[in-house]
Image (cartoon, rainbow, N blue to C red; front, side):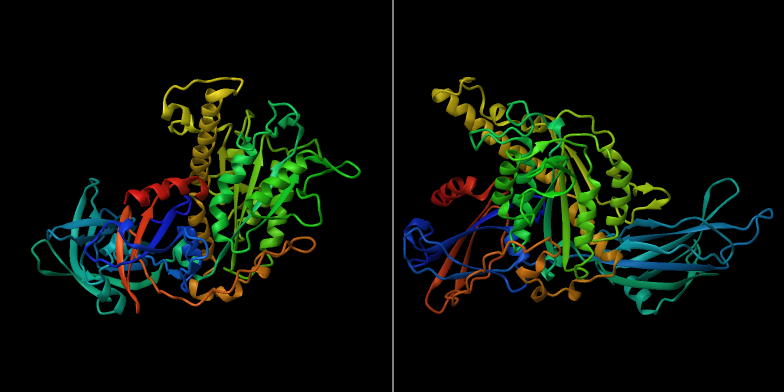
Length: 576
């Protein structure tokens, strides 16, 4: 199956004791147990696997333990760094040195050559061409012995390209030094005096986000929430901070928290989320603060995403919204935290949720540039109706942020404008729950069946919007993480899962951290089942000392909470 970090990919594994091998109806077999989890749970568990006791529909029934191991399919992840030079590639033309370039073509299954790379034009009879980096997939489809054709071209005074000569080789021959000098052949196929030299040809592995997470890199989510007065009085329904008495009617801040948290929580074995606020007068003396724990305690840490939401709601009722909108203190706080960790062991994602124009943009730019050299990504979610054009300066897509002559090492900021669930879905081209289900009996008062339908549709719309929001704001995280690791020369083998103990994962909180509950010791494994998960519904048979097992794997790719889909998944299992 395709692994997508930015989606909550829910899986359900069902294990059966097969009494009749000819009977394919699952209801006719003895159910041993089932397990629901996400792909992220399995990936972040590392090479030892995700070990859990199976659940059972029968209370007190003995089930067993299932071991789930994720493995990335053999990939063409090598990167080739190549540097060539030429010898006797031409002579003076009207007092001008010749200008040449080379191209590389790979042979396909049909026996024809496809151009995969063209170098820059370089002057001189004996040019040294710029170093080039090209993926193994592009160069030779990962086949080091696939034949390659190198052609050298000369630019004439008329601006036309004229073939100087060509040679055949393979990546294997170039990297081993066998073809360190390749004599070119002319159009007739006969050798000529011109040559190409391989100055260097190095094959280096390209490590993916999957590789680092499996090796033990822990991803930590930190929130920073805007408590400025521009959000409106929380007691009014028009306020962005209004807390509805109906827990299903969430505001934009709650939706943004859920969208990022429900994905990343599966990659953090502590389930601890630090939450800071800014722009409020905080108790007991009403002092204005640009960085305070939303818990209003000695530590900003909250247990689980539910704990984050509870702390946020409690804080709203106890602080006075004020201002201004300063985000640099939160960024600098995460910089301090990230500077203390082991290289490659931890990666931090700061999610800033704000409704207004940043008032400390100069300081924010300086902080972002500093953070770009550390294992940090920054997500900014703009809620409400403010003008967020200035935010695009921080989200320097395609370029690196530059300020006061300093350039950011990486692009680490992703800005997303999120006004409401309905407007978000319309802007992204998705249907709201109301549009998807057709016209209903809308009752503004919320009474009777019509009100129940309306609330159900609003809940579904919020869940759909959260899923779409998560995909948009988290899609760049894998590339940002791997770009940091590459820049620092960090490889997965340098990371140890044993070093990522729960009590050590989050470093730098002021005061004692929230202590996560310890996982119970794994029980003896009754059945060792290794499964390869494919898209759709599949059945697997595995051998056991006692019996044969059949596991039905039901794969969905929702973007909502697991519990929301439990009923649908169970229905699929019954239909199977």
